[in-house]
Length: 377
Image (cartoon, rainbow, N blue to C red):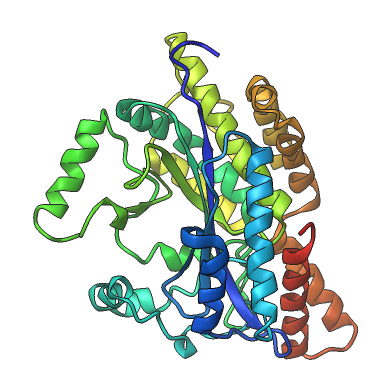
């Protein structure tokens, strides 16, 4: 490792939905469940905005192997304790059929204030995401990496899609979560910043006025973390399969190190207009891995399978450095076989073909998500 190389440690945060093990509908987390999880996991578990949600965060991990061990421990605890109350967790970004109007938000000051400040917009936030933190070094480097890594956010989103259904209907989108989340202020792709100082001046303009409490209320797809010395990727849908989550984390870690390697050679990834990257973001949100993204250098729409081949080659040295080659390689499998959104539609279609009505077919989708959450634990 070069003398000034950051350690590129990672952390993964995931949000889960709790469902009734019989009806597959959303259910509130009893306080006794939260207490049992906190007893075992301490501050690695917390409630989320809605009572039917629960959030976990791994420890700081040097490698994907370490992240796997911790994430498996966290998921197993949630699943085990939820089962005692007749509940089960799912790691999907939208529940296929439960309705947001029927959910209650958690009675804590933070969430009460959010409900007051953001009104009807936040009440629709029946969505879950996955966040990946990467330690990339000094503050200015965080902003520099953020500017360049934004190009790859649609690629990560396309691999992660897990929210095709909303309120009992197929939306036609692979990541409907983003259409809900983007209604909040201070979301979407990050603006280009010249330095960490510029980022601080921009955030202080809002915090000094009391418009926002702190920088944690800036919900860009990628941001300098307000709590840790990291950049935080927030673009991805949460993953039903733990191994898919680890692949997305490994890609994010590898891309960050690849951009650092360019910087020490006085090189950098080309910065494209946010307008153009937004088009790829929409394509990923709409089609997942099916229709490809625009390669702006080539001026062509390129299949995800080809883009993943290129990305894996691009970060091959970095995957080898972190011992995450197999996790990175899995991106090819996702691009070829489809995302959770594709699997959920296949389950629904198979149930409908077997003669089940819409409600029963949707319950079959949730049962499939419960099963995938438990795989590998």
